[in-house]
Image 1: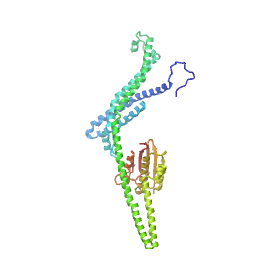
Image 2: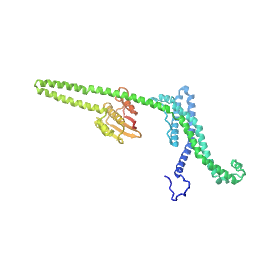
Image 3: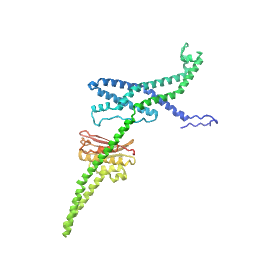
Image 4: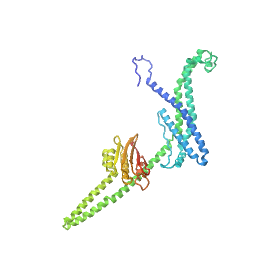
Length: 437
């Protein structure tokens, strides 16, 4: 807020922007703290980078160097993350994106180490730890020396008495006459000048650190290329998921309603012949059987339609749809849904599909006594989890009940993780972005 004065300023008097001063002082303090804190960070990063790289390269011949290099790059990656967050906080602007290669989920430690060593951005992070050392060291030293020198010069009159009487320092020479008064004036003026320039100096040093971080710790081209690959994989997953769904529907229609409709046609034809023979009593059992076949076919069609998207999902939202799915489950289900309002239709449909498919597998394969379904929005993601106390051993491999579920989640730009050790419990978690577009 702008400070208000009870007395009006005289006409023509300059207006002092107290709010600008109030905002600039904390900003200057934040920049100074950022530069000074960079000194221990620079030392730690440099020691880790040089020592880890040297030890890793020297032991590559006996293969111990690979995990050492991987650990060094992992540490450099973490330190680079700290630097990115620090630069974004002090500048108030987000850095361009970057991209780290990751190993295949579930890969062993050798694969993880090789993936880390083969990650170009990890090496850029390591290079930043080395090249950033003199930049951050110099920025911290200049900030500290300039600030202390400016304050010391401005307050020279308060500590001048402690200096020896026969001094012949720089400020003494600049005074020309060597008198105490002239020396105090020169020191005070120079100190004030240094402090006046100090905010611009600090801003320039912050920009230097930010420029180095932007040059080495970001890679927008690689990030965009990786994002394009993820979108292409998502499209392929969507096509595969839809193809799998169509095949399943075709199979279910052929094995269920279609067979019942064929049986219904045969019963109606037999009933028609009985009526032609003027024997309605013999036709009655056939009519009863036809009615039963009709009801069963309708029930199977309703079950198939629920597997696509139930009307309650479109009408009342994810909360009500998941409650209906939990009520239909033969295994007792505890439901915990905290979803504020409606989400994008694709997100709700995918989340519903994940829960119904998971509950179906729990009922068929888990031998569980109970299951828990949770759905909560965390930031910009909907996190859906299905847990059961069954025998475990579930995975999304081909030929298993969860096959195709990962593709369905990937088509919505989400992630799916399954934890199911032998003996249980099984926890299936899907994260779905809730942003539009």
